[in-house]
Image (cartoon, rainbow, N blue to C red):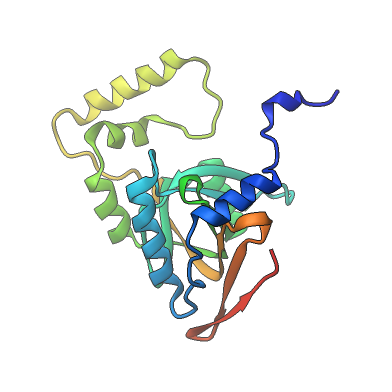
Length: 222
């Protein structure tokens, strides 16, 4: 059974592309100097133009059988060391990362027609980093981290609401400590690819590859 073709947008016509070219000023080629500076510039622009969660990224891992798995999470920190997100370490992604500490992440900014693909090794953040971020979260989110057995079967919504209420009573008005099973993961990039839409599917692709303490670059056919 084929898909309803009315649900899938038609490919741009020749006239559509010609109009795009006529209306747009050709941008300069992407800079090859510093991948993190380039990422920061793109993330800043996304923050101004994306309606929701410009820091959203897809994280892909593999399970014990080598089956890939992807989900959307929020980037919470980045610097020259890598890209950080936080989660329950006993969740599916936590278990998969502990078993195979490698991951791919993807940022897609539709309004900007850009994406960044990153692959690398994964390491846990320090306890101090995890504590600092956890303490910055809203109190209800902190309690939720204790209440949720993330990725495990949930009998019904009431069971979750009951757990949240129980944890709320447990901690009362006091400080909510970080659960021992909740922390952050840092993707240490080995490659970063910056992709930018160009007319006629002749997109621009710039890849940074780690080389010792620096980076090499190459451009790819679209």
